[in-house]
Image (cartoon, rainbow, N blue to C red; front, side, top):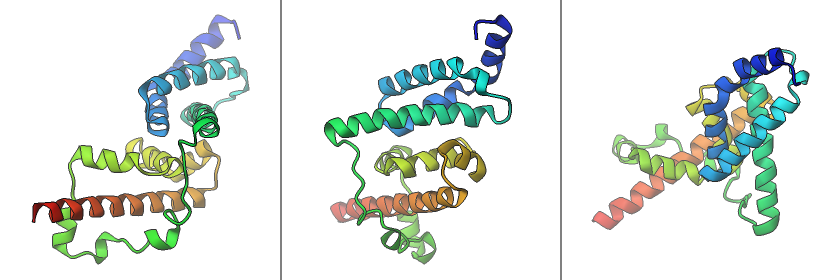
Amino acid sequence: MANKKDRQRFERLMLVHHDAAYNLALWLLRDAADAEDIVQTAYMKAFDHFSSFHGGNSAGWMLTIVRNTAYNLLQTKKRNSNLVNFDEALHSGDELCQFSFGSMNPEDTYSAMMTGAQIMDAIERLPVEFREVFFLREIEGYSYQEIAETTQVPKGTVMSRLSRARAQLQKLLVEKNRRKQANVL
């Protein structure tokens, strides 16, 4: 793809997604340097394979490449150091579904509200597959269908992961707030 017209088309269609690509990589990897490397690698891959892009959802196409590249790095890190652990007991749907703001009294609901830094810390603690859909939906504003295309999982799985991410996030925030209140008393 050495032709100037193709390069200009690539820049016009793909570079507009650079911030979203970096943000996704950062949310997945939790490391700014790794995120920068992944985005650079993903853009090189996208440029090399741009001839296979025939129009459509350019953001989804680019973010899929970023996601896959980031997951490859996470897999390598996991094999080398077991940094990413998934505890089935901790993340089972039954346990997470017990927590609902609707079932809390107003005082507990108010107490569950946290500062931005505390919320970001709780989001960081979500498993990567939950953090990913949470980021794409709540931060980037993508539809369930766009997230399904980007993550290459069924739309129902996206909805389930998002629900579980919200429930686990709520649980983490409520528990942190209760510990904070217990220390004050």
